[in-house]
View 1 (cartoon, rainbow, N blue to C red):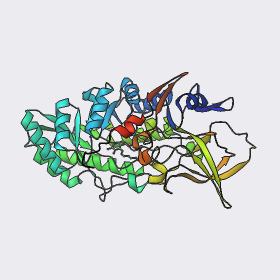
View 2: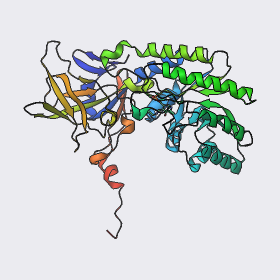
View 3: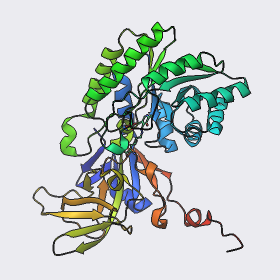
View 4: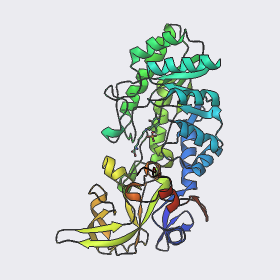
Length: 424
Ligand code: LLP
C-alpha cells in the first residue's frame, strides 16, 4: 500500500500533484511520501508487538536526513555500515543507544569512532575485526557490545548480486568460526559478546530460506549456551521484499510482514532473547518514486525509444540488477487509450542506461511526465554524478505539504570540488 494515487486524472503524492512538484522543483526529482513510510514502519513494529524487538532501519536504503528523522521519531534505530552512516544517523537525532554497525570491512578508525560514539552494538564479521576491536577498546579502556554475524550458508534474495548468506558470499563467519570466536572473546575484556546476527539477502519474497537460516541461529544459540556462553541478543537482519510490479501486489506487503513475524515467533519462542531487525526496502521502497520528463522520442522501424531526463546515474537498479520498476504516466490514460511498446531510456552514453524494454505504455510525447515507481529504496542512495550530471533533488510530501529535503546539486558543487595541480 502506498499513497501515490490518481486524482482528477493526475498522479498525486498524498495530496500534492506531481505536476506541481515538477513545475516548482524541476525534473528529475525523487518524491517520497511520509504517510507511506510511517505506515510501513508501524506495520512492521506492530507485527512485532509483544516481542522484545528492536528495529534498526537499514539506512543504506534511503539515508536522507528527513527520512531518518521521521523514522527516528517513530522509534526506529539505525543499522549503519560506515562512519558516514553513523554520523548521518546521529545528525538526524537517532540516539547512539539505538545504532548498530554492520559491515564486512570496518576499518580500525571506524571502529574507534563507533566505540567513542557509544553505539549500541557492533556486528563483527571477521576474526580480524574482533582483534582490531579488542585493540581499540583496550587503548580506550572501554567495553563494547558486539554480536557475531554468522554466515548460515543459506542465501536468498531477488538477484545474485544482493544475496549475502551463502558460504560463497563474503559476509559473516561460519557457524564453527562463531563458536571459536565466542571462546576467544571470553578472554577480551573490552568486548562484551551479546549474541549473533544474520542477514541472508535482500528482496526476499518467500520465507523458507529465512526459516532455514533462523533455525540455524536457534540451534547455534542453544549450543553456545550449553558451552556456557551468554546469548542474549539475536539480530535477524533485513531482507523482506516488496512488489515492484503492481500486478504482483496481490502478495500484499502487510501479509508478508505478518507471515515473517509468525516465523520469527515460532522459531525463537521460549529462547528469552532480545530480537533485532534491520529492515530497509520494506520500509521505504514503495514510499518513493523518481519523477522524470520525456525529452524526445527516437522512432525506428522496429521500435520506439522514449528518452527521458532521468538516467542510470539517478536510478541504477535496472542497469545493475535488471530490476523492474513500474512506469506510470502522471496524466492518467483513459482505459481505452492506445498503447505502444516503448523502450524507455536515459540520456547517458551507454546502452545499459535503459529503464525498460518493450514496456506497454500509453502514448508518450516530449514534455510528458512519467514516474518510476517503487524507487524509495536504493534509488537516490545509489545515485552518482556519472556523465557530470548533478545529483537529483529529493522531496518529502506529508499530506498537502511538501519540502525539498535535498536540493538539486549546484553546478559549483559539481565542478568546484575538483582541483587542478599547478603542474598541469
Ligand atoms: N542488514 C544488512 C546487514 C544488509 O546488508 C542489508 C542490505 C539490510 C539489512 C537491509 O536489507 P533490506 O531490508 O533493504 O533488503 N542495492 C540493492 C540492495 C542491497 C541490499 C544490501 N544490504 C538493491 O537495490 O536491490
